[in-house]
Amino acid sequence: MKNLIYSTLFIIGIMMVSPVSAQENLSPERKQAVDSLALEKVRDLSKYITIIGSKDTPWSEANRVIDRAEELFMHGSEIGVSSLLRPQIKNYSIRQYFNRLIRLNYNKVEIEWYKIDYVSDLQRQPDGTYVGVITVFQKFNGYDKEGRLIYHDTTKKDITVYVKKKKTQINGQLINFWDVMLGDMRVKETSK
Amino acid sequence: MPQLILVLFVATLSMGAFTSCKSNKKLAREKEAAAYAAKVEQSKNDLTAMLNGTTSWTLDEQTKRLDTIKSYNIDDQDVKDLIVKVENKLTDAKAAAARKTEEDRLRKEEATKKKAEQARFSNIDRNLESIAKATSYDEANQRIEAALHLFATPEIPVLMIISQAEGFNDYDRPTTISKFLNYLKDRRIYYYRVESVKKDSHGKITELELIKK
Image: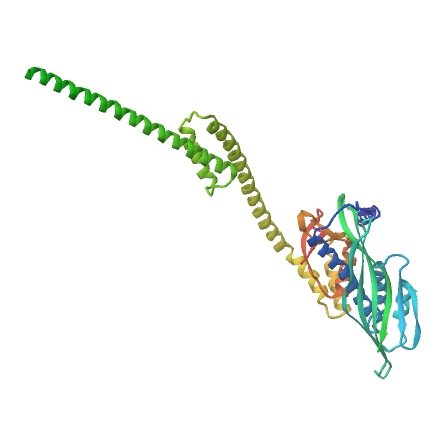
């Protein structure tokens, strides 16, 4: 019963989430905290992609992580996928991308993201949303049963990030929070 | 004839003494007036400096100086006006200083309390950190199971403060303890510390507030 009360209160709180006035101007110190928060979300995604792609991850854990990873994105966002074996870039919905990632036809997969940084700083839009672009470099290694590296590429990707101030009520207390949502992830370059 | 000379001599001496006495009194009066004028001038200067905040005197020293000037009972309208203004200014400054002292005291008290609370929360911090440091999924899951016993339900809210600048608490999107513990397992890093907790009557945590280190 108590579980039900806490869960209900929390769910009601989250359902009451609403955007906060767009008039607020952030001090450099607070803006830096928001910048860092958005970068941290991309680092979270980086870790999730590594976990989902890894063949060492138990199936149940990988599927749980897919749910967490999907929560990072705005509804309707897409992820671009490139390959050195074909010229075109394919764009997938978030769920499709992760479902493909978990089933990659390699015996071992290593995915590492590095040089995660802003290519375009978070800029405040008229509706109060901050929008920026973060670039990442992804190193992908796919191995066969014999442990031979059979595919390798490095891809530069741009991720659009949206940050909006929202408020929610938790246990009767009004909480203002920064909601970071990732948008489309586009392939910029792919190389060996 | 000698008698006449004697009379004239005495009269001359008497007149000289009278003139000298009159001159000394005048000099004394003039000296007194000059001293008073200097006192008025110095009082005006000191009061103006106190009013404009251009003196290096402490608040206590200014109060003493003001009391001294008031004790002169100077009959000068400028001085009287300045005394009223300086009195008001010092009253305000004393109130502000008292407020600041009280605020400093409260801040120190709050910091001491916070430190004591953080020491109280170190057990929770250790639990959360141990999940992030687990070397396998099994180990992490066991630690999550153990840690969940501290909480009323797996769905209790977790608030994460990302900044406390300008007296504002800026939060990340709230999550649940169950999701947060799994997040630690996935990220393998715990870069928070417990800021506050709310507990129910059974001592179980019903709300956890963390702050980014």
